[in-house]
Amino acid sequence: MPAADLDQYCAQNQERFVAELIEALRIPSISADPAYAAEVRRNAEHFRGAALDAGFAEAQLLETEGHPAVYAECIVDPSLPTALIYGHHDVQPVDPLDEWLSPPFEAEVRDGNLYGRGAVDDKGQVWMQLKAMEAHARARGKPPLNLKLIVEGEEESGSVNFEALIQREQERFKADVLVVSDTGIVAPELPSLSTGLRGLAGVEVRVQGPAMDLHSGVFGGAVANPIGALAEILASLHDPETGRITVPGFYDDVREPNDEERALFARVPFDEDEFKREAGGIPATAGEHGWSVMERRWARPTLEFNGIWGGYSGPGSKTIIPASASAKITCRLVPDQDPDDIARKVAAAVMAAAPEGVTVQAAPKAGGRPVVTSTDHPAVLAAARAMAHVFGKEPLFTREGGSIPPVEMFSRIMGMPAVMVGTGLPDDRIHSPNEKFSLDMYAKGVRTIAHLWDELASAL
Figure 1 (spheres, rainbow, N blue to C red):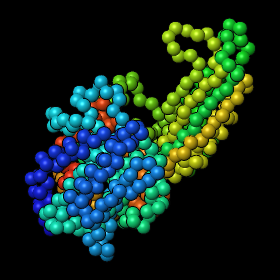
Figure 2 (tube, rainbow, N blue to C red; figure 1 turned 45 degrees about the horizontal axis):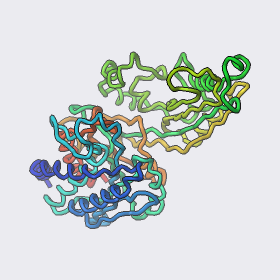
Figure 3 (cartoon, rainbow, N blue to C red; figure 1 turned 180 degrees about the vertical axis):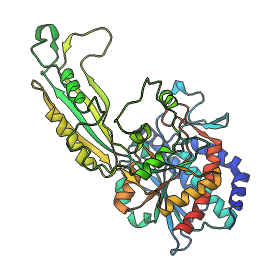
Figure 4 (cartoon, helix red, strand yellow; figure 1 turned 90 degrees about the vertical axis):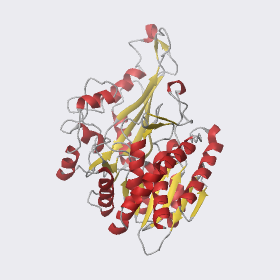
């Protein structure tokens, strides 16, 4: 079938596509807050109905120990390739509310953007998938391959019940490829495809000194200070000269990007001054020496301090030696690092760096594995062709510095390769007040996904 029929259908119906998304954004499906549990369920029902309206043959709620997920499928012919679409219908909390220029759950169009919580993360991008399905169903009667859809209800609160759902429903979720639209592109004029996600490992540290806070004048100089001990431990985990992580064995399993991958990363335009502005006006970039900023963000492991507390932090002063101090550490991981192994190694390095006079605990936390799909995988090349058709230029290949745990779960449990086709922009303010989705990127996203189904049907 000629691609023009899909483009024409999408163009003729884009105004309605926007209006429908606005309706979906009005449901405050905040999964992290128990007070919104009924709204998350109502939202799941809304997406179930939307899947049926879009042309999926069946759609239902899949219950979990937490919020429900939405499952839909359209099996055209069991002998054809099958794609499983993943997204999530829950959203982040909206605080601080007073920073929103329009109410977060009363979506508003301004200056070519749709503003509202969930506009791009991820209701808007799931809606792209639904409307791409609709384009095939209405313009041609059916898609050219089998499509399955799973829309999670807890991604923004940690996907704590999703792995159990995958384990339970492996037969139902079976597919040749996972398609994810929860990512973005480099810039409006620079289409791009993400082919990898970093993994995550964590450790929580507690340093215990005296049984209670002590008067610093009476005991100072004779009792170890837990905050000082914690600072000493944390400082020991990086080499200040090279920026490398000093944890023994940390880099043992790192699969470094090859020359071809580094060349692809180098093609992505990068303005360091603009990056520093986007990062909040930092005076300089930092990180592991010998790697570009993009490589540090996408293809190198990290060890970061996410929180630190102890002692007195109220107004005025309180001259004490605090009883304890704590910190949270997370590491972003790259292939082939194992999160449990890294958490154990970081915990061991923390314990080894503990000075005398304090007791230290280092508790590893659950994490996730990194995921990478080869840039020459047939599904990735199919996505590149679909995006090139819509944007008028070949997409760049990138990786995401963050993690999407369900993608790792499908890879680990079911061996499913992932294609990440999103059209969010760097300034869409996901997880922040005034989240938005460019209407142009929304329209191009619908068309890209619609063409992706043609390309995948041929490629697979």
